[in-house]
Length: 236
Image (cartoon, rainbow, N blue to C red; front, top):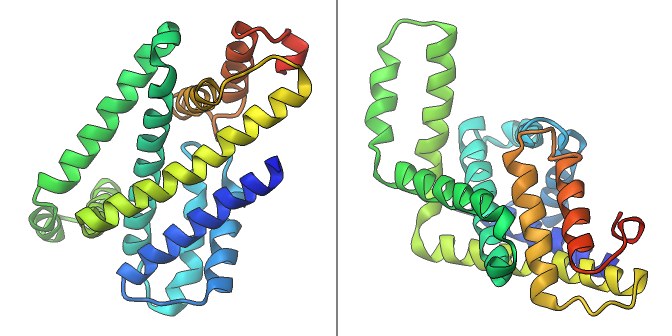
């Protein structure tokens, strides 16, 4: 059941990704979208998981520019962080030690949403076009083009549907954690607590800036399970 819930997570995220590609005007086959989406996970251990952007190379022959794909990728990651915040709120009162991480995540999400929505990135991009070439200018131009593209995914309907799909997808993974924890030890870990533990661990992993959150995510998850009655071997 836990494996099926994890597969549901990926299926929903593929669906959401295909929805973003449709927003870009490209109605691609399900099989192709699924394979390209999953291919990015080969580089998931890159800092900030930015290596997953490798999927963009598969869309270039289809006429989709890297800036458009990076804009969709940016919004996808932003919504996933927002979902983790919502799941973590379920046990906010119990997780005093991790409140700082939660507030940092809230601040990041709000700041990025406001920046994408309100800053005139199109004018900024036009200004950068006349600036002398240089590595820094080229990098800034790529970032600004990404933010120009990201704005189209902030339409209320698309934003809400993406958030809800992410909530169900990552909620399924949290339910999987509860099921596995129940098998490991007969301690009644409630569903809200399991969701909070899973979400806080992912948030800390993301804010640690370690490749893929490797190590920090697992350490926090084990520590929180230990705090809720599991022995450390059971938690690990």
